Length: 159
Image 1 (cartoon, helix red, strand yellow):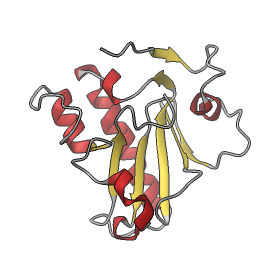
Image 2 (cartoon, helix red, strand yellow):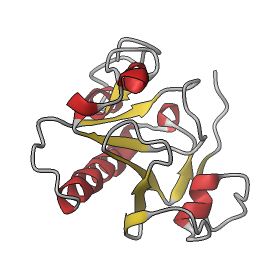
Image 3 (cartoon, rainbow, N blue to C red):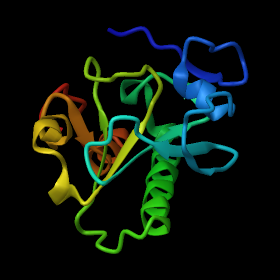
């Protein structure tokens, strides 16, 4: 079983977490597109598609394995912000998008982050494996919400 550091506020000393730095406005290189009291959305530094954004909670939560039923609303808000940013950035075909989370050990930063990519049909070929639903590395947001509702058992793969 994984030990999780969850629920700490990014205003508390999480100097080791780059996404906490971005949430606090301390990373001058981050291109923040939208922020509210709970979430921040910024461009991915290694985009896999023409539009590749990350939505992170301001509250430090390690990853999707740290979530429970009480986090369903948070996940829904993350998805809502990601979709809003896509629209703000001129994406009009909302059927050609990919929204989801990497599952440990395939996370690059130990701070929950939602990947928002568009058009999904233009995800770089050499990056496609990282964003393929139903693999050990990636879970789409809909499947994660179903799991959190207790309808789907947690599996490390086939999400």
